[in-house]
Amino acid sequence: MKREHYIPFDKEFLLEEQLAEYAGDKKQVEDFKKLFDIIEHYFHYEAFNLIRNLKQNYALFDPDINPKERVAFVGKSNFSVFKETLLTILDRGNYSQVEQETLDKAFDDSDLIGLKLDINIEDYKEYGIFVRGQHKATEKVSKFFFWKKEIEIEYYDRVMIYLNYHDADYYKEKKTRLDKMPIDPGSIVLKIFKRVPKNDIETIFPNAIPMMSNTDKLLLWVPGLVGGISLLSTKVIPALITMQAAYQSGETIDLLNSKASLNQGLIALGILGAYLFRQYNNFVNKKIKYSKMLSDSLYFKNLGNNSGAFYSLVNSSEEEVLKETILAYSFLNRSETPLTEEELDHQIESWFKTKHNTDLDFDVKEALLKLKNADLGSEINGKWSVIPLEQALIRIDEIWDGVFEYNQLTLS
Image (cartoon, rainbow, N blue to C red; front, side, top):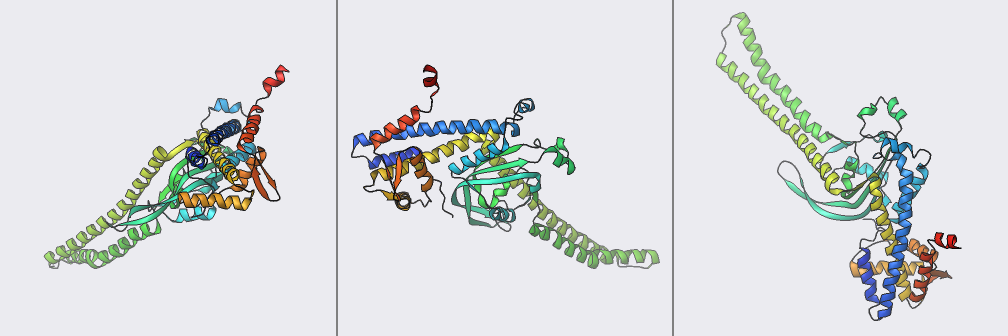
């Protein structure tokens, strides 16, 4: 699996891990806790501004908003600002966009449901799938009648789908009835899911329609055509022709043998029909399985829809930035000498690998940028260092106090 920037550990867990490194100095422990707390509150304030920005610029495209309310946001909601902010939050939350090649493979393969899905991508003006975190698990899937096979399935821990629908004019040109559409034209749909199979990621598209695969069609039609034609030509039709000819000519025929031959042919056709019914029933069962998987995804795996998804995205973004910043500060603070970007990156990644058996690609550039912007860290001749904890507390407190300057201005 590809290494990710995503840090698969809770912020409180990482805090305790870093505090353990200062265990010999009680003051350092207390100061580090305070620093963590203030930085967390500051990033939370940043996140609040992001979510307010998102909600205002999304309102015009929100399918859940009342049409009367939507009118109030004409000229206020800006699509470009909304999309730019959304992509910023996804990037800060260490989400990555799924490449088209991966999507195409998912459309062709189906590990768990064994069902081909037809998805009309042209229904959307624009779409994107963003994922974070991966893991593997062993699952049992049905193979040929009663045989079950264990296969290793790769899952995405978090998946967000972005669907931007065309405006009404587009669907009118396509002769699509607007009253039959499940959503208003021009809307933007956002959905977040957990634990989605990589090769079945197409199941989260709302317009996915189950179709027979080529294998299903072959198993259904080839035996039916070959067997049916063979039985009709060798058993049923000859017996009927013989009986009809004898009846018309008045000749005596071996009625018992003719009836036996006819019955055998009809019985064989009945068996063939039962086989075809079973094959079709297998397809129906796959559709039922797909429907259950879809309902499970919507009910148990869905973490947020549309504007409700913002809170999950912003919260994960806030946590990832906090974890990266505090880890970079902690490692630089404990280092006896300044470190290059590559040295810091290697130390943190090695720590995760050695202590937690986790192979990740730490986003060192983002972490150092945050330290620099807060005046907690600086670079000299390619080497990075941070100010001591006591000074860091004073500096971050100054930043936090400077966030709300309104009262100071009015009092003066």
